[in-house]
Length: 339
Image (cartoon, rainbow, N blue to C red; front, side, top):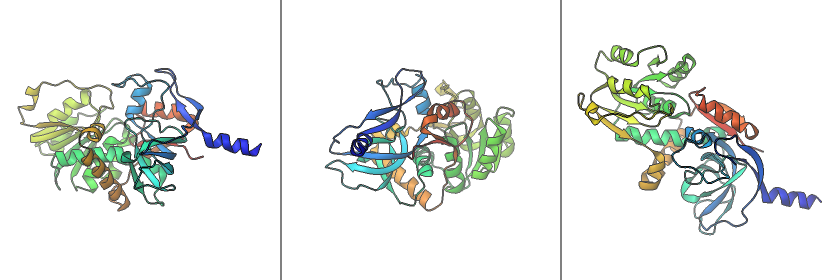
């Protein structure tokens, strides 16, 4: 009897499954795929981040509709359980960070991932911080380099939920030594922005972003804007930029994609760039791989520190998704899947 129970535990795993578009996820027991593909790795998931993309998928608002049944979650940390025959650099027991941007499936006690989407980390690295780290920070690192961010530059960062804006504050302040103005929608988030290094903060639900930015910069505007919010906030960003400045679009946590005329860029001769780590994975894979590894190295060297705002258990996955949807925190929301 005990052998039968152990065999069942070995051949099954728990997962948060979306069975119907727009409905709550269900925790179900699923049968494990018996055989790995040559380059696949089976991971025991320890922590999984809840990103804005996960909430969009679960609410039926993602740009691509997943095939049901579907398991969300693409940014995670865990341990290697098994490797395919052509996996070269990972072995059973290795601790890893993963980005399953093609298959998702990480809101589960185990998942499969391609070796190319995994990065090895030290055994003493905390699982929750590891799961909160690479997606946001690698996106911002690429954006900072494309915007030619330099020490002493004045930067405006818009912050909402999911950790992307907060990662921009952390990197710009503590790695590039820029002067950061952080703009967010609640008073409690302003204190977090200051802790991460912002020299000035704006609660844009109460204050005029443009007026405050111009006051802080002697009416010059900021050289670079990292906008992770979109919507009406983007219009303020456009007015806050200095001549020959740059706006880096990181995401749209407001779920409102701004529509602008290219003529709006002309008065200040400013540049507009967009950064998507998902597209870097597909189109510029070397930059994708190296940027994630750099972020991991920066974290290990204590240059940056991801902010885990809230942690939930797998059974409370729907509460975790709602928490991000309602933009209740500026940092990462993590699902602790440790058994």
